[in-house]
Image 1 (tube, rainbow, N blue to C red):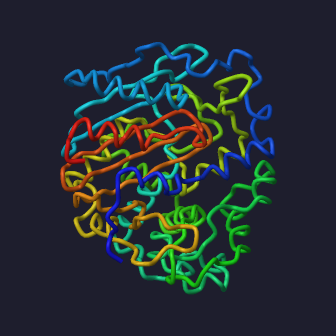
Image 2 (cartoon, rainbow, N blue to C red):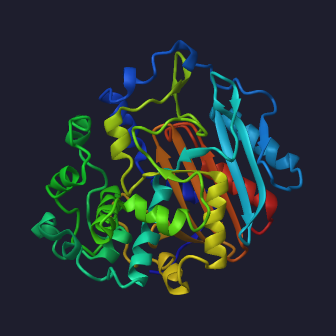
Length: 410
């Protein structure tokens, strides 16, 4: 179907990724350590306790000061009770502006810096899609082949007609998220192994006949990660590291793991009505689940700029593969998904009212909310990463507002 004319603000209606349903579920079932915090009273700080000015420039960048941008971002942090954010603005693949705002660690009053990584949530999907497209270029995967070809007996009969292309575009009819029972047992031994997750996912019914409609599916992108692993014989994240992160010099990029420390990373926060900003600590089982294809990547704003540069100069994917990522799926949304936009492979697609083509994705994780927007016709791109739970953060407003400050056409 053709891309619909869309206002900038209408981007906000799309699902961010893991969705607020998951954050609420984790809180309700006390999968958070100490039911919502680390137990250290020093981890709780009243909201809106940011200083009047709290910006940190990226090391080694030459950029013209933009007081209007800094004031706008600062105002948004205060208005939305966001403890910290990192911003990078690119034009034609080159960094124009990169800053950190507020705090990476509110208890220590440590400033947020654009060199620090965050959980990017469902922005991960574009890297998984790129991995599949690279395998397609290598002749190792066929986009129109059934996923059962790659999953073998682990693919149940009702998945028999689902193609790789349909999973990439969310037109396979797969479940949106693992069910409540999965999260209830997520800390059980072996619950987050590929075999256990496949055994669980195969019990979920399809929501529609594959190829007949559209509905956002984290389960589908988890399956794509498993397929990449099956084809390459290694963890899907290792393939992405070798084929994307390392060649592009994305030194902060890594996959979520329970053993990861918070060094050089913005800390994740929730808001407690009585305590203020509270460290959002997750169990090891939840962290291991979050390492899957729907949401598994951590990286910095500056490394997102390197990914943007590779897309701008075509240094990673072939022109045909890159075009496929930004080609509409061609199916109307299922009930409840009237997003006012289309989807390609790991990207939402829209035409603004002035005719500008936009490709973008948001990410929502426990303690993080992120946005990455590329304005294809003008060459501008903006990434905004915040360290507040997706129930509270709105990086879309920040990203689109900053974009308009750099170009009147956006």
